[in-house]
Structures are given as C-alpha cells and as structure tokens.
Amino acid sequence: MPKLTIDGRAVEVDEGATILDAARRLGIDIPTLCYHPGLEPWTSCMVCVVRLSPSGKLVPSCSTNATDDMVVECDVDAVRDARRAAIELLLSDHLGDCIAPCQVACPAHMNIPAMIRHIARGDDALAARVVKERIPLAAILGYICPAPCEKTCRRRGHDGALSICKLKRYAGETALAASETVRPPAPNASGKRVGVVGAGPAGLTAAYYLRQSGHEVTVYEREQKAGGALRSSIGEATLPRAVLDAEIDSLLDCGATLAPRSDIGAASTLEALRREFDAVVVAAGPLDGDAVAVLGLNASRTGIAVDATTMRTSLDGVFACGASVKPTKMAVRSVADGRAVAVCVDQFLAGAPITGPGREWACRVGKLLEGEMETFLAAAATRARIEPADAERGSFSPAEARDEAARCLHCDCRKPDACKLRQHAATYGADARRYTSLAPSDEPTRRRFEQNLDHAEVVYESGKCIDCGICVRIAEEAREELGLTFVGRGFDVRVRAPFDESLALALKVVAAKCADACPTGALARKDA
Ligand code: SF4
Ligand code: SF4
Ligand code: SF4
Ligand code: FES
Image 1 (cartoon, rainbow, N blue to C red):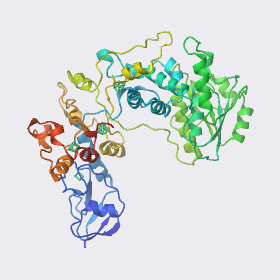
Image 2 (tube, rainbow, N blue to C red):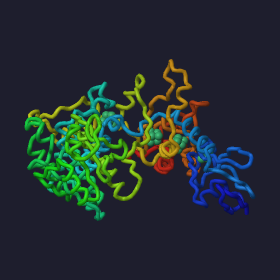
Image 3 (cartoon, rainbow, N blue to C red):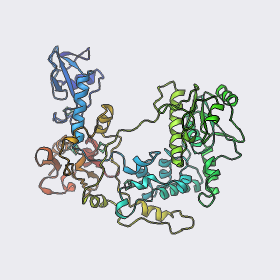
C-alpha cells in the first residue's frame, strides 16, 4: 500500500489509487472538471494539477497513481497559477452568460429571468418571492423605477425589451392583493438589536433584511408616516398612495417597529442610539457636510463618509447607506444599498469579517453575432412587447403578464450555481478574457451561440461544452443505442449526436443523468 505525503501530511492508500483519491482521503480539495467518479480518467481539463517534489513536475492528480514516498504539493503558487491558467484556457473558448444581461444591469441584481419564468408558469407568489430576495418594495419600484435593466435586455433591439418593470409591478401588486403577504419565514432571533435612522427606501430595505437575519429592528422616522422621498417627492399620479401605504405596511409587518416623529438630527441622539442598540444604520436621505458634522460623523464630498466595502462610518457600530452617503435619483439604488448595509451589519454583529454582498464571478456573451438572435428566439414567444390594456392604471392583467413573460429569451445559464467551471473560476480569480486577446481581432473568433432544444428533458448549448467527455462516457456505459460523440478537429471539437441525428434520439435513456453530471451548463435539464 503506497504511503505518500500531500502538503506535509502523510496518507496511505490502496494500490492503484490516484493522487486525487489520496488527497480526498485527507480532506484536501482539488478542483476537477473532466473527472467523474466511476469513469476512467480522461485527463483533458488539467485543472486538477499538483506538483511533485523535488522534481517540480506538474501532473494531473486524477490520472496519476499514488506511489510510495511520493511528495505532493497543492498549496503553492505554482499549482494555483497552473490551475488558473487551465481554467482561463477553457474560458477563452467558452460562450455563455452565467447571469442574464438584465440582471447584471439591475442595481439590486434581482433575478429577473427567474421572476419572469415564474410569472410565465402562473406562479405569481413564487415570482414575488424572487423579487423580494433583492427588492422588498416590488410594487412601488414597479411604478417608479427607470428600469436600467430594460436598456440591456437582449430582446430590446429586436422587437422591444421585456417589460421587466411592469412584470415586477405585477408580481408586487399580486402579492399585496393576495390575502397573505409574501412574508419571509420567521427567522431565529439573534438577540441583537439594530436602530435604523430614516424610513425611506434604503432604511426600510435595511430593516427588512436585518429582520430576516433575526435582529430586532426599530426604524426612526422624522415624519408621521414612513416612505421618505417616495412620499415627499413623488406624486399620487406617478405612485398611488394606496400602493405606497400597503407595501410599506406589508414590509413593516415582517416585525420591524416604526418610531414616527423621531428626529435623530444631533450627536447626542445618535449617541443615545449607539448606547441602546448593538448597531445603528443611518439612512436619513441627503445630508450636507454641516448636518453630517452635527451627527458627530466624518463627512465626504457627497454626504457621510463610509468605507466603500464595509459601509462603516467614523463611529464604531454606526453604518450609513443610501442618499445619506451619496445622493441618487434612483430608488432602486437606495434599495440595493439598504440590502448591502444589512449584509454588512449582519456580518459585524456575527463578529465576522465585513465583506458586504460582494460580486459574483460571471462570464458574458456580449454582443450577438449575425443570426444569433434567431437562435435565442427559438425558445420564446414571437409577439412584440405588450402594453397593458388598462392604460390608465398601467398594470398588466394576469393574462397579459403571462404573455409578456413568455417573450423572455432565458439568457441566464441553467446552472449558475451548480457549474463547476464557474465555481473554480471564482475560487482561482480567473480572468475569462486572459487568453481571448491572443485571437486575431479582425474577425469574430468566438464560438457561435447554438442551442439544441429538440430533447424533451434536456437542453444542449455547445458554447458551454468543455469537451470533458463525461456525457459521452455515461451514454456509452448505459449502452445508449446512438449515444454522443465528438465531431470536428482541434479547437472546433464539439459533442454531438452522431450522423447529425437528433439529441432526442441520441439520449433515450440517460439524458437527465448526463445533464446532472455535466460539469457546466452545456447539458442541462430543460426545467432548470
Ligand atoms: S456554463 Fe458555467 S461558466 Fe458557462 S455561463 Fe453557465 S454558469 Fe457560467
Ligand atoms: S430576454 Fe429575458 S433574460 Fe434576456 S435580458 Fe431580456 S429579460 Fe433578461
Ligand atoms: S456536454 Fe458533455 S462533454 Fe460537454 S461539458 Fe457537458 S458533459 Fe462534458
Ligand atoms: S485532468 Fe484531472 S480533472 Fe480534468
């Protein structure tokens, strides 16, 4: 039985075991893509490399047998660099949007395509839940948001962007009209208390997400009613008061306490809040330098000075967000800020490093090539953008909402969370474009967008295939009559059904198994 050391730790494995097996026995995590348990090694992706000592040779751990006295290193820069380069090479020939362009553009990064799909399926409650993961003021923003998401909607240049904002309004208003508000599950009480100064969009949003994390929250508002600029600067004609009141009530219904007519405009009152609460969030709307100084806080050019990542002010335990930090006309920015500060405060209260919500790693398709829009359109309704028949109210009926939702092109990947390529890219800080610049720039060198929809259960997108061969091998083992094969040469190799047959014919038995084993979003279940 070979005995070896990995990162200085000794391990004994069975004869024939690989370095990967040995590392896993020690709980050492080595990234893999083309490796699949139970299948013979394929050794194509090279993300599993490790270094042998003293030779310094890099070898793929999934197909290198462990031998006696072997000394293996994983936790060194040379290995990390090699793995990152392997990932970047795969990404240089990878075509996909991990996140849809609309979601990238939304300042709150709401999962727009998921919301739209729920509406298309008639599940309005789930649609509202998706919106409220990022935007608790769904109906209100459905009336007033300038919808930067729609400017980047892939369908915009064809026959009009999806009516994202009105669909969000639909989801929000449907939830308000339902007898039960879309209330998040009751959180476990954290025992911590947070004071929020200001009941505008940023403060209310912060209160909502802090409540969800189990903290007790009191929101101090100078006026009699909550709403801030939503109430003072926007008229009834643009934002009906009934919608404003109902949605704020439903938000506060999550257990936050509103303290109206409370002016926290002085250092002494802020100091009192600091004594009373475990953390304080200032979301009091625009403040000039004098007003900031009166509170005893440091000022910046635009308002309260905060650390951009942690959102902490110059006073310990005091955070600030929204227009108090930087004036904005877009309520959705204040909402995004309110959620970000809630994440920061929650981390602070847990004694964890304060990182905020962070940015998710994502690769992008970018501009479409000629003819690619037609491929996207194959999976969506052909009608042009729908306007609500009730022009006065301007809201969709359920049938209109479903019809409009059916226009969405599903630009987002079907495996944004399960994709191992994306996970490894994030872990190793891969730059998706590192090697693309090597290609000649005068012609489109990227893969073309292709989408095979002919199978009832799965979708195949060749642009996301990394030629790992897992699906080919699974189909072979299952004795699929036709199975899958590699077609083409060199850089242009693609997985296909042989003889130009359909995917439906190629995968009669193990389509779902192949989709679940595919390490990327290339082969995915249709309903994902
Ligand atoms: S396959 Fe993975 S990396 Fe590619 S778009 Fe989908 S999630 Fe992103
Ligand atoms: S078509 Fe749908 S998924 Fe694509 S950008 Fe527009 S709304 Fe987003
Ligand atoms: S489609 Fe097949 S070959 Fe391509 S990445 Fe998925 S499992 Fe690997
Ligand atoms: S080469 Fe080892 S997992 Fe791909």
